[in-house]
Image 1 (cartoon, helix red, strand yellow):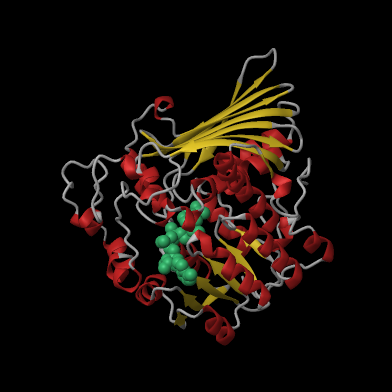
Image 2 (cartoon, rainbow, N blue to C red):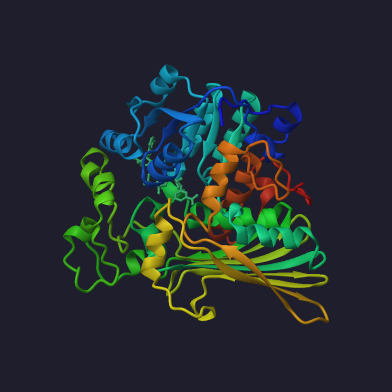
Length: 464
Ligand SMILES: NC(=O)c1ccc[n+]([C@@H]2O[C@H](COP(=O)([O-])OP(=O)(O)OC[C@H]3O[C@@H](n4cnc5c(N)ncnc54)[C@H](O)[C@@H]3O)[C@@H](O)[C@H]2O)c1
C-alpha cells in the first residue's frame, strides 16, 4: 500500500455538528507518509500508539516527534518504540519544528485538552486517547476549538471494535427485540486491574476526575452507541469503601513498605523490567511513583459507583462499576418491546475452565497481545418464545481484539464504509465523558443533573 498523507473531510455541516458524522473523521487521503507527533510517552503511548504503529504501519506513517514532561521517559520511549525522531518536553517548540499531520494525545487524562486545543489551533488533526477530557469546561473549549479550526478530532474508543460489542450493536440495530426500553449494565474490575487504578494518578480526582470518567467513559460510549441516543439526565451514588484510607495500613510505596508480608496487594515492580525502565528509572525527574500505596490517604475517587441514566429516547439505564471484585467481567441486559438480550463476558461461573485473574490482567495489559480465538454467547429471548444463543468468536488481549481493528480502520482502511459506525468523533467523546462528569456532580450535589446544562450540545433522541 503506498500511502499516506491524509486530509480529513471538513464539510461545514460536519463541523457545525461537532463531528456528528464520525466516519468522516477517519477519512484519509493518501500521497505520502503520515507525520505523527505523540505526546505522553507512558505505557499506552509507547506501546499501543507507539511500538505497535511502528511495527505494523511503518510503510504508511512515521513518528516525527515525541513529547512528555519527563525527559528520562522520553529517552526510554525512543528506544522502546524504535524511532530516531526529535524528542522534547516543549510541545509548542516540537510541533513548530516538525509540522506533523497528526498529534496523538496519550498523556494523563486531565491535560488531554491542552494538547487537543493547541494541536487544533495550530492547524493539525488530533487523535486522543479516551477519555476526551475530564470536565465540562474543558469539553466545551475542545468543541469550540474544533469548530473554529476546521481540523478534526478522533477519539480512540477501542471497545466498540471488539467483535462481541459489534454483535450486540448489530442485533439491536436489526430491531431483534423491538424498541429498547431499559438497560442493565454492570462492570466488575478485579483486585488486580481495579487495584492498579488506585496505585497511581487515576486515584486522584484532579488527574482523572475519577473512574466515572477515566474508566466508565468506555462503558458510556458503548451505551450511547448501542442505544443510539444521547443521555439527557443522570442521578448517581458512589463512595470509597475499600481502598484509600479504608486500608488497615499504608506505606510510601510497595518497594519500601513495612507491610509487604501482610498486604494482599503487594506489587513487586522490581520483577518487571519494562515497568522499572519506564517508571522507576525516571522517578527522579517528576516523582511519578508507579507502585504507590493503594491505601494512601490522598485517594479521593470512588471505588463503588452506581448511576441511573435517562436517555433522550426515553430508554432508562441502571449502571454500576465495582473496583474490588474477585473476578473481572461484565453483565448487560437490554429489555425491548419484543424481548430481551442478555450478554456477559468473563464471568468465571459461566465458564467450563478456571481462569487465573492475575494472568487475565497481565494478558489484557500486554497491549499488543492477542490470545487464541474463543467464542462467547449472547442470549436473545423473544417474548413468548424459547431463547436463542448467538455465538460470537472473540479474542483476549487488546480489548477483545478491538485495539487492532481500531488501528486498521484509522490507518489502513479509513475510506471503507462501516455499517456499525464505530469511528468516534468529538461529539461521541463529549457525550460519553459527560455522563461520568454528571454522575460525580450528582453525588456531590445529591441531585439529578441535566446533560443539556453542561455543554452546548443538546441531547438528541436519535444519534444517527
Ligand atoms: N483505550 C484504552 O483502553 C486505554 C488503555 C490505557 C490507557 N489509556 C489512556 O491513555 C492515556 C495514558 O495512559 P497510561 O496508562 O499510558 O498512563 P501513564 O501514566 O503511563 O502515561 C502518561 C504519560 O503522560 C505524561 N504526562 C503527564 N502530564 C503531561 C504533560 N502535561 N505534558 C506531557 N506529558 C505529560 C507522563 O509523564 C506519562 O509519561 C490516558 O489518557 C488513559 O486514559 C487508554
